[in-house]
Length: 79
Image 1 (cartoon, helix red, strand yellow):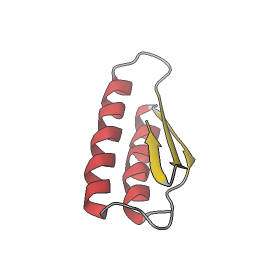
Image 2 (tube, rainbow, N blue to C red):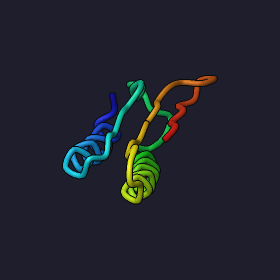
Image 3 (tube, one colour):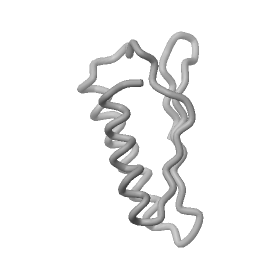
Image 4 (cartoon, rainbow, N blue to C red):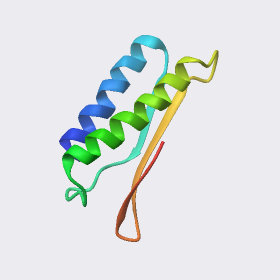
């Protein structure tokens, strides 16, 4: 995996356990990321935070699904 990406996801996973929001991850980051770690940090933290805030507003089915994979030699992250 990727230390930065894993840390951000784990932060929201732990927070979700406390607030009854399921955070599920499918896939993993490649060993070599084609972007700077600072860019990944900003991108991932903002998008996961937005998804988390949306899940907080739900009365039921409070879930976040994060899918990580490779598509045409590029990293694809779906939240």
